[in-house]
Image (tube, rainbow, N blue to C red; front, side, top):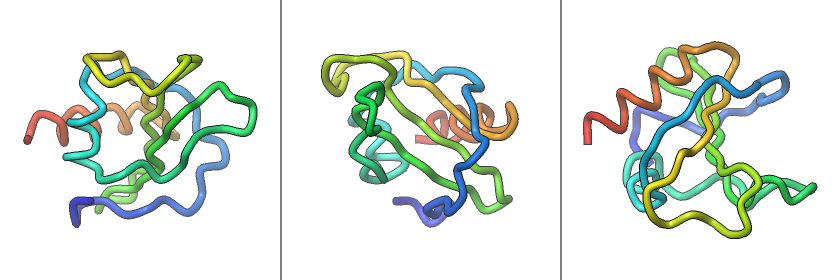
Length: 95
């Protein structure tokens, strides 16, 4: 994981904010390995729960997929505000 990001400790209250169209491989390159292996209800297979240097909390996750998408995919971005989308898109663009 880049030193720009750390594991977010409090995800309570985050919600869907937008999408990023990219690959699983690129997400791992930019954000490191996923922080969770999925949700208890089976709606999410894999998720990143992170915070940037400015304190913007964000999640990146697949939604209602049968398996982890490997090719280009519309990954969901969650957070407390649409700043989460900006953080993710800017990080992806930098690589």
